[in-house]
Length: 114
Image (cartoon, rainbow, N blue to C red):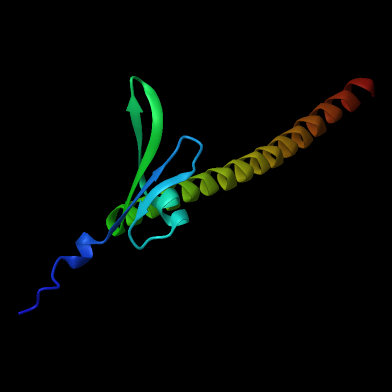
């Protein structure tokens, strides 16, 4: 009988840091940067004052954090690219319109002066 079922769900890491981000306690296999970057952060408060930060890290939470970061950066990139394309297209249309309107005005001006 396989008794390893569910052990992957039990793999997690916990990190406790001071408000100055100094490591106070750490358990689990994940690295410090992984826990801080992809873990779930909670404030530990007493009387409204933050005394520590508690990070919880597991594979499922890590995957959700990676997905959230990926979506955020993708949307930001697409918005920036779209804004640049829109500005360039607007400038081209404005240039075309100004050439067209000035050409008509110059033709009218020539007719009036002749």
